[in-house]
Length: 363
Image 1 (cartoon, rainbow, N blue to C red):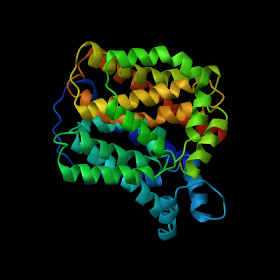
Image 2: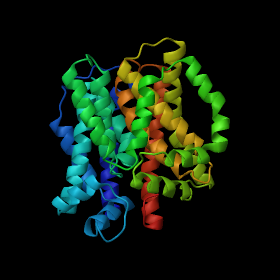
Image 3: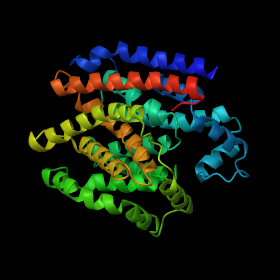
């Protein structure tokens, strides 16, 4: 059944992306209004019922034995499990909240829905959004960032609400304090030539001692026991990356379009003086920091964190591109990005099916 479900869901995703190809490749005017209910419902249902992944079943076990299995899980998720007895209903609440805030963020920052949603399907949806419960924390944090940085962000009520949401997101997953810290850096650090060049110069020095620096970070006061324990487990975990030829090809195909459009966006901003709104600057710098951090852990004994940071960058990148590419879809670099992203997406779909048929699980 899972194999047939996987094929059906992936076929739907593929058909949807193909149906939006003109909005991905040309500066088509987006005729749609800012609808919320339909995308929230569809995203939520997808995340609730698409059960092709070990985390789906792992959360089911956690829901059954929330106190006896010794899993590291946040108090807010335990509280929801205690009051929401059905596992599917629990998923509906967690991913419903995540979907609600993602859609509200898209509408609030005036992203193009016809552009954003196919990008969201090809970037974070199948890789991370439907998989991990920290999607709820990420979605709430990004909406809070939008409230503070987009438009007339000096309105006191909006700022107060954003602060409340930011604090709430802090407790929604044990990893959120780290992402909160990255967001604070993205708020205050300028995106300019000096910062980018300095980051490249510092990279080899940071790469050599990144595991030590990570251990120092986990030793700081104020971090929760869950976060420290989870961080140490990530540092000790074996690599998820395959060194086989197929693994290298897969990773290269996944990385190329992301790095291309990131470099293009940063280059335009720094050297062509493209004026980004404060909100888009924060999203872009947030994405840059996460991808930068992912490469610091690539090839390390703890390069499980490479995948974690890389996947976490896909959601803010989708939000950024949903606005940034509205008037740039006719550009040559953008078209190369779109075609290479689609090829990577198609390859990933086929490879996931191969993983189930050959090994019994999604790779």
